[in-house]
Image (cartoon, rainbow, N blue to C red; front, side):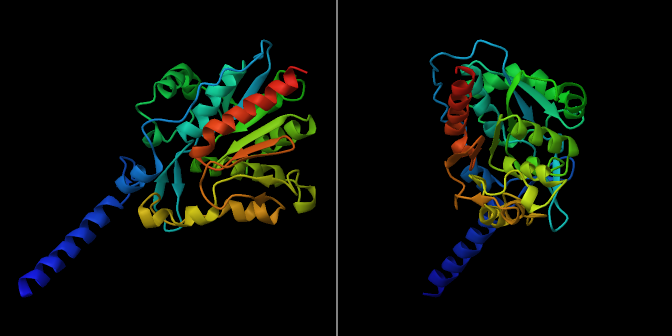
Length: 302
């Protein structure tokens, strides 16, 4: 019996050690952390569910989508540790695949023209469609346009654009929610009855539209959206997805401005409220892209 108890205790200790190792975020060369092996196993995949939809009557004109990406890499968590983030590759590129199939070009910008930061640890390495679109857009990601230049020189008079797209990844919470140029772009899109597309943490950037007003003047007050839930973000440190608790809670801030998040899980939920199309997580990226492409075609093919 004694040997059995010793063996059982040893097994439990080894199990705890293995769990600790598997759920410990992995350090990067710059002192930040990417998700733990366990978190990567749970939250990422080597392939996607892209279905290569063929759209009837694709757009053949010059209408484009303005994709606003983050140029910031590291998020400082509540405990001071840095999370190596950026834009999620599936949430950014899978919708682009659908937009391209529907005939729309995508113009890539960051706030000051610095390279787009991408969560490469989430790249589906065995997905040929994702590898192809990444290769096609690699130069755009490395040399994007400046959002500031677009606002100053192109925005007011431009009739080439049909939508603004903000991809997800925690990086959407870095720099974009307080960006005054994005504030102007979101109001421009709304005032000109264009579409705004945001997935996963992308809706955090919608907070930029509140910089010059309060809840009563917030253009998305009363909207319902699909977005990454605050409650799921709170679980990040438990599995080592993030190296600490979130520095601020974006869904809570949207709620205070009159926005309702309709999903409770990080699932495949998508939603359209007027001209705002949203999705809950990477699981939603395929149907989010299809919905966006379909709705944009309805407008340009009238």
